[in-house]
Image (cartoon, rainbow, N blue to C red; front, side):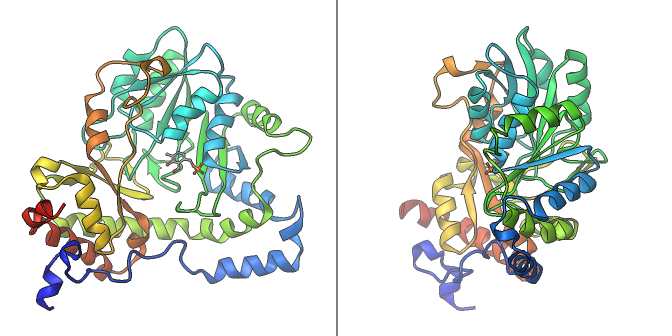
Length: 385
Ligand SMILES: Cc1ncc(COP(=O)(O)O)c(C=O)c1O
């Protein structure tokens, strides 16, 4: 190690990973072979081939649900779920004030009104304790997203939803293959959502799926997405590349979990930087991102500066989502109670991208080294900003 290795890359030192974060998707011979097969059998240019049907069957079996319907994106799958559950104008839908922004907009897309609730202080995911107080006469559904390795205790959500007669849409876009209280993410509610977008754990560049135990929901979603032809389909080629990835999902998730455990252990206590902790012990998380609670004052740097410093080291970090109540007109949602934690997440959520979690022990150590290098130079980095 030279003295330049000890200096943050933003201050002219040598980056911990000069090659940058690991690429995604990673090379996979099984994907190559299935693409070759789809070329040979002509599926690559057909409306209907072998692969979409096979993928829907595999998704059904993997998740143990009655119905799976693929479509063009996770965002569209959320809208389909809302429409298939007959949520529309005049209705309200509860969601966490810290969530994927597309979910808020999908509620608007069906003419309904979002109701925003606060999040859990430990993992910045939806907190079931806030649901009951948020239900009003027009509330019809709740969207529950598992975010950044955070898992929402679904048994509690389902009990409250049953009590108040709410539909539950469980968004597992960030957690395919995760287990919550013994069941796969996306299978607890009346509808579950998966995403196959370009950065996701199961990727086809674009794509999504709706899971449901209800024949009527499946049928209404199918009708909604057909106008003589399917309006937002998953293609045969996209379905083909997802098949081998689904076969490996459990093994990849297990490896990601091992590396998250190693990272937590090796990182130790860093003032102002705390990985999300799930309040629900009975959870086997999926890690599309690993979320962190960042406190700029305690760490000694602004979040933007910390992200810039990590990226300069070749480590894939980003700020989290903006909270949904910030910067939006209050006429576009109803606020249910105090949103203090969501406000903190708006300022302080950080996410680490997943590809490094399939890497070696040394690659995990590189993340730790980069964080400590930056932490040791916060005064100089603040001055240089
Ligand atoms: C929680 C969540 N839900 C839904 C989506 C939407 O998925 P897609 O990009 O396939 O539209 C995303 C995308 O990042 C997400 O993070």
